Length: 335
Image (cartoon, rainbow, N blue to C red):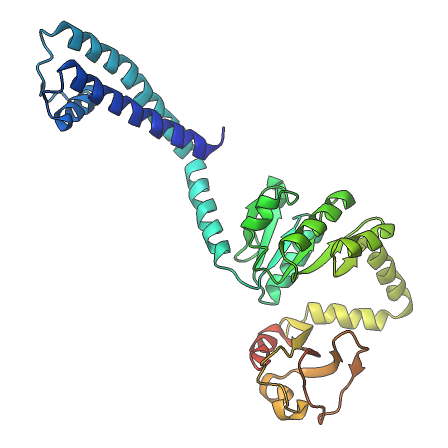
């Protein structure tokens, strides 16, 4: 049984015993005593504090029989409740419940965060990179071992459960999330979660992992904005290692640079952005934030590399830059 249900059941049973005992005394004495006195008599009887009889129980056989039954069954329920609560505390389940509630409350406050479904090798790599880029991430994972392996990630928020359950996606705040990365081992589950995520949030960006590349058209039709095949990417990486090792070493060095978390990222010119109408050169990104401008793209058009500094920024332009993630985060405020 769920821990919360066990706690609620224990509290309800104790409450029921107290109310039944109080009402029993009240009825047996013909409604003459105050109900508070009946309640007091029930509590001191069940707890065996020995303060004495506030109601004339001695000599009243029906009341004495009722009191013996109340103490026998009532004390049994109370002792069971105390032992259960002790077990829960010793096993750390209560602290787990409090930690879970605290985490769910933190997740409820998130906006424009990212959800990662699946905490395996791929999912952990995704979370690590998102966190390095100063993004807020929520993991959905039902395997304890995968959650435990992800705990080293700073400020990790997670929902323990199956990502194919709509309730867990809702708990992760999918309606307010900026994106979701689906890294489930089963293509069938990936397709289902992709479709569900699109139904729950029509604006969210969805990236889906797939094993079978023939599944790509179905994932796109189900709502995925992009698909990734680890096997295909791994093959390209091996070919690149063979044909252009210097380029691969450059990218690897960027990811492991001792000069900071150097990344290639994008700065989006959104609606009502203060950058609209300004020239790229006017922003002085290189001087102010030590950021290198690599190119830009307008909506789904082809990327323009090394754009002129006289280029005027308009809405929906994505400026591709390279620099430290801290500096990129500061520069994003301009956009």
